[in-house]
Length: 374
Image (cartoon, rainbow, N blue to C red; front, side, top):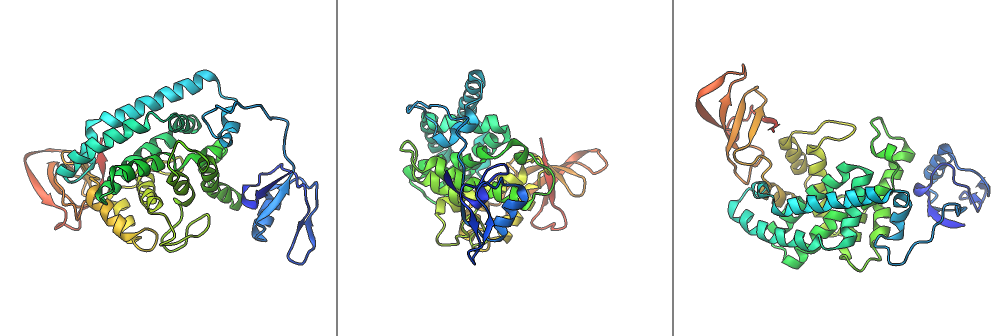
């Protein structure tokens, strides 16, 4: 018998102890096999904790030296050794590329800040790449869904830029980057089908997804080879400034600043990336969303740091305008990163411009960037 929270329940589990309502009346008796409707009823009645029978049929003995927290084992234990090695090698390659990739400099809108940031970030990623638990965890995310790994690496980079702009010491930047790499580890506890579902989520499915914050916290809280703030970020990265988030509806100032930073980086990268259930949003629209959510969903001062130091449209990159014209970014104002100065190189009819001309999108407000052109 084990205790579990109601939103962590899954169909097929068996109640070990009767569930009573507020009047002491048995709602579900011991031995009841839970269905989705039963679980939704428990959630509706705001039952916080129940006792279920433990399934001991699949238990295996695990070496104490195993680098992964025991909460990670159920998903990983049936993986082939070669798959684990391949994923870990991919993670090492990805972190090495992230550490040395010169295009990282273009993600920072102030060149001088970018040069300094790059040197420090390169060192931090190099140190984090030596932590076996971090590599094992990222490899596990990669095997679950490659997009989880890509998202974690992007969020780590964006979070580190915000921390650097906030004048964090190298020690704090290390802790923030480590937390940003691991904040979504609880997602590996979700069924694959739920991660990739395209349709509308049921109440039970939504609660199951929300529980990944608690699962992540449990996976990280007792580890000694990563900063304690990693577990806090895993728990709080979906909490919101006004208390509208989850899992505990914490609000400012009770949300750790690292979690606030990771939340901003998380939502931005999620919006501008392709997802299983939708296409990506234009980067400018994502920035507008963050600014419009300042001191409501996100800490406005941190949003402004993000907007002022992230180069969403790097100088030299090609973009498509809502007019149908193709342009090249020539200058970025850190106060209006979503409205740079662009040089038109192709007209809306597809004809090439013989004498390129510039447009300041801060002035031509009717024109916006639809998306970047790879």
